Amino acid sequence: MVVVRKELVEYLNSLDDKSRRIVRTKLFSLEENPYPGSPGDKERLSLPDDTVLYRMHIGRTWTVLYRVDEASKTVKIIDMMTIEQAHKKYGRL
Image (cartoon, rainbow, N blue to C red; front, top):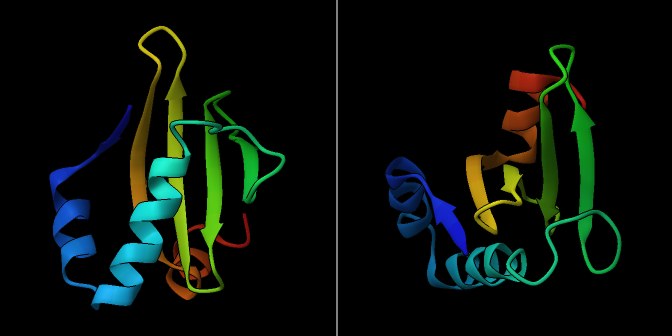
């Protein structure tokens, strides 16, 4: 199951139809395989406090940060923004 924060749903709904369709398709593909590898541009991020996050680029436009909860088989979308915004906010992850 993919869980998206309410604020991110609002952001997603503000996108044009084509973009919204592309992003939703990629987000729901995480149900099948949330881990790096084929398919998709996903990467495991190890943060200094030993927190594990994953990053996925969607097209060449958006970056999604997410966590995987193995116990509940849930992918939790933490943040979603344009790639440019992600580089400003987090640096080049």
